[in-house]
Image 1 (cartoon, rainbow, N blue to C red):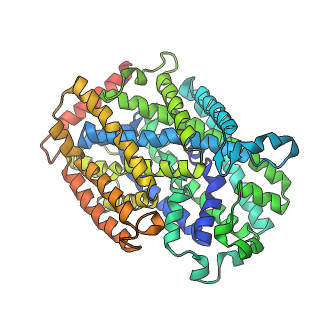
Image 2 (cartoon, one colour):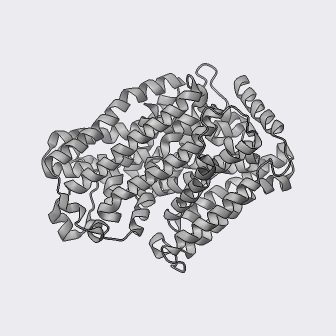
Length: 524
């Protein structure tokens, strides 16, 4: 229920409308592709999460196979994406508020202007984020009781919406009568929608379960169950929502404006208004609070634990990882996340832009998942693995390639902007290394060089790639996909060869490091 609460957030409220506008009926394929990519990534992390069930686990795994520098970069990228998710959910709630159709709600209409949050709307966003944080301020039990309560509503309402749209207004002709009308903007638009419409971001929240692994009962079994079941349920809901949305649009609107001209501020609520289903309109506007609130609350928990976990390697101030004595929650990390989230939403005041930033940062962090999984199999083949699929040998490099392509789909200049934010964390890392650790920088760089080189490559590729993804079209579609796939396999091999086992560092040292981290966490 916690995973479903995180997964079904603002993505379902906006994703279907944005994806249909970009790709037309072929947006259905975008949701399928997004699900395949994230489930593939999730399977690599499920193996790691079941091996190392601990709070903030997603921030730690890369260091077990490639050392502290790579671990810090991956954790930093993942943390940036988690913090950005919190204001994005608040923005979603305010954007739906701004389109309330009732006369008494006219005061909400100035919360949005030109697709961006205005200053009065920003104050409401701040208020929502403070509420998200306060719900997390007192123990994991209060947070999970809250999420369990609203998770039922969050699953029920999309299901009701699907049923009502199928029953009230479904036009099979909207899906086209051949490949060209089904894909009116070509196959490239399918991949553009996967990142640009927030589709991949909508599936991202599987890590909520992994990041609170240390606080779950029977984590080695429940991490696997929680992630896989919730991902499959969510994928089914999102794909059916997209089908229902495409079928419900009035064919006259499509004939007049084409799919590119579809521009609903509150997609499902606007369609329900046009169809005269007033009770559904009210439920949808209610869910515009419930879904973002539930996801925002869950990601305050996830982001704070990710930040607290990063302090255990002594590359951030120790007070950020301090736990409240009574409730054992990282309150200082929550407050720090809240301040940064307020800054981010003050700069990026658009839901789609926030969603794209999150997608790019998250996927860069996820690159380490398949690499760490295979490297740890070589370092410690006899380590207890509750989940150890035999296909991971070929599945991990395939996942790495798919993740690389998805990063490319986030488009220039978003790619370089996010990469620069990630690179900004490296000076912080070196500051604390010089101040406290004083380890061999050359050795650390050898372990992390593959990711640094990869970031340079994907930045150049994003700039030189096809114009559909914001590039200069020096390498046109689909040849850009081929170049990225081949280069990604080379970087994957480079990454595996950069692990501890190749460079002569004993697994015993890694295991000792892991045990020390958990001992520190227990003592705190």
